Image (tube, rainbow, N blue to C red; front, top):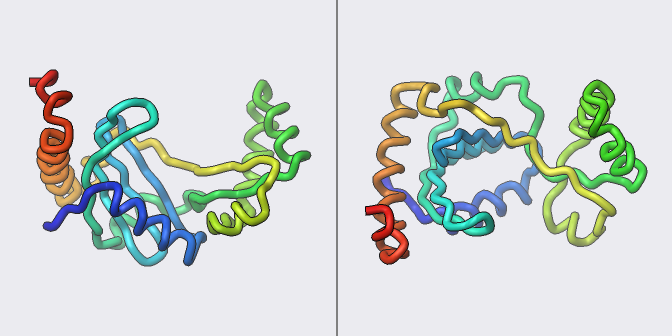
Length: 172
């Protein structure tokens, strides 16, 4: 298994997303694991937060097996969806009304996500990104997932200690 720094993988993921924005699913857990499944490729990432705006970590390209596809079956496609001023007002106005909010979000999620360059070109009034699905423990998906998570945790720790030795010293 050859891991890569998360910064390099993020660039690859964004490039692939921009080429085909439909068909992506993103799952995350509370342990810094992130599973990014695209229509063609999948990635498992181990994220190490540095502060609220920065992170580091490692990841690896994974086989998007039938087992992985089953886990996310029926989930709405992850992506970036522009909102009109009217849609944004409706969404913000619905925050106190769960049923109405669900209806508005469902309506928005029916639209196809668009590539980032198109967003930059059109500059919408507002934007809905996601959804990112929260999973209690991604290692529970399968034994191979658990093994991969353990390996990524070791590699992420090595990278963190190499890049940020003084911060790492605080944690022992």
